[in-house]
Image (cartoon, rainbow, N blue to C red; front, top):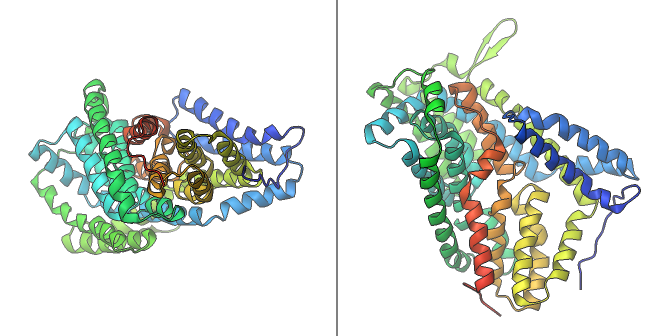
Length: 465
């Protein structure tokens, strides 16, 4: 029995036009990438035109506009926007405190440079993400500090960001408190502890593949020009820079609060206040660096600059979720689930259908947790019909939810990473990197998808009942 398609929003001339917004969006992404543009602003005008074209291609333009508003008013977007704003201010405070110089001096003193720093960043990001259970929170906490420090230490910019993102996805996949872990387990009636224990072998295999690829890529990619350009903007740090390391207590507090179950927004703002206090007490921050006004029009400081730096990312997130609202009302999500149910005709094809359903639903929802929640009941039906164990179903969902389609440029965590990269660029001169390039060098999600497909084809870890 296929899932009923409930499409309220109809398109003129042919139902297939419902796919046009997606086709146009990815065409714009390809064009921007080929053009070599690194600015997030490049996506805004095409997306605004795509929304306009979509409205006038629908039979009910009022409903199309309501669909856009519905997408923008989504709770996921609201959480993302406040997390972006807080992350911008938080990251700027950490940078102006001199923390980057402290980490660079520490890196030189310990010999952690270049591709070694990339591997270390993967492990740091994975450890934090496993502890706090959120890939987005990990990126906004880690990137403002590790990214500029790593570039100064000779790491390849895109490779470093890809490693940080990969580590975040590793933790999101295995953390017991991760929203994806909870969503995949609870929708299938599986025990969270059993699910985490059984998926460690998949995550570890993907991590080994990723580390090997980062070692190889580190040898192949040249970093001399980027490192030299950024070093010319910075004085050589000395041992006095170590004083700034005290402010690491602020992101540590954010991590601990997330581990304890506090919301990401609360944890970020606690980090902001603690960074201010630590910076003022240690002498690494002064009031002028935090916030200042010069009449009649000048306003500045880390808080203002950090918030303003997130503007383009916020606009992009709003446009993306507006497009998601159109797709929901056009019945595209239900059409996909119906197609996958028809595809699942044997146990092995059923497992592949589960993996493909969540993999394709993630980019349509621009986030993995909503994709899993939407797909959960369908996965349950497929799994029960072909006697696929609930733990196996949950694992396939989470492997897909943190897999290769999460490397696309419009995914919420990728947008968060791009936002804090902008903050680092404007404050330290760290290079801007195209989002698509980061996605290509984020090896862990790709490895997760390959491991999942291997497990489906060979039956590795398969359970029935």
